[in-house]
Length: 135
Image 1: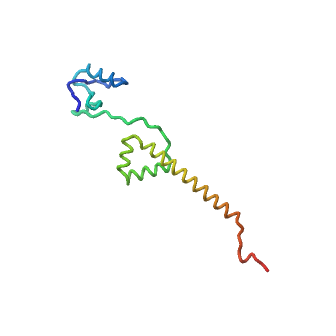
Image 2: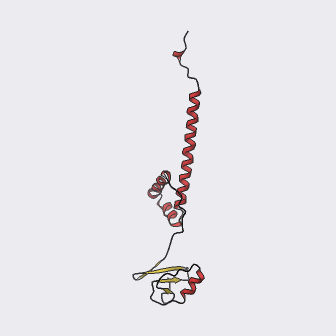
């Protein structure tokens, strides 16, 4: 866990680099709201009597997920909870659902095309019946 006697912040600094954060870490006073743990390179925020890790998910592209992706999401939430948790915590859920949505849409379009071609072939084929033949 983080050492609370050194490296603390009253507000989280707006530095971008790890070296800058470490430099600020050594300049701060005790009894502050944020601390930095060098052993795991994580920031911790004081919540009551406990320091909680400041974790954020990576930025995720906003890929569209329509009906097929939403149905698959409902399925993995109910039946494949471990997969859902893994995808959610790794930040890959939206990408995974967008890919499922794309595959399902492609499959639906392919099946629709095949059915239309089959119906078109059946319409072109002449229909013979016993009643149509006269002597």
